[in-house]
Length: 324
Image (cartoon, rainbow, N blue to C red; front, side, top):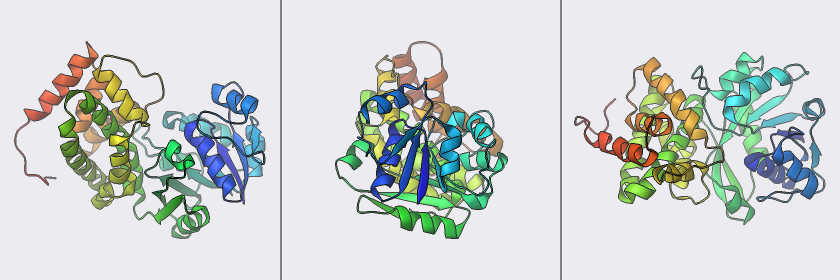
């Protein structure tokens, strides 16, 4: 199968590595002026993977999209709409798109698959690939479980069956709304976990429970299945993030609580802002999301702001545990 992986950062380079190992013909694309692309071009690998020589590295977007039967996108979620405007110049409506990324558009609150639909791609040609797992563990041979979801039942099953291996066990997703929202929201909870690693580690247990519950409320309000919040895309990935030394979002929260700065991409920062938009749109309480938003975007001393956000959660009025 001919596959182009668009985006050659941390996750994109792993996806190219993994799909090539599955016997596919793979192009790994990245912008020529990006540091990630230049490192791969000069060394054939990065700090995470060593690309097989049969993987073609390219900075020619037209070449990459024309070559592929399946186009895998792994870039920063907030850049997806502009990126799709570039891709739309080529003949891509007959291609299958797989989103290996997690996020919600800040300006609109749109899910990433919705952005592709608005860019002219049929929902029947779109799938998302999300779930637990860190590259460092995968390349060390440690297996994990992930999810592929789509509005197209036949497509998601075909992709999951094609991509599965002894390294990744794929499940068929059953709720595209819940899968996408849950996957994006886990990065917000990851930031909260990093804050708690500094301030109060025992609260990470309640964070897992209450965080999943508020995400379930949001999914339900948006028309999805609230049980999706307890699946691999959210709770499964969320638990991995909460305790992983490799998570960018958890590390971001940890460093914020210490009054330090994390320089790499933490998608949960923008996602907390996007979820605030959805909270207002659907009238759903998201107290942990609100707290993360305040620590990410508030003013004043970072460490003090983190402590105040946790204190504010404990002064909220009592609720029944499973309230809607």
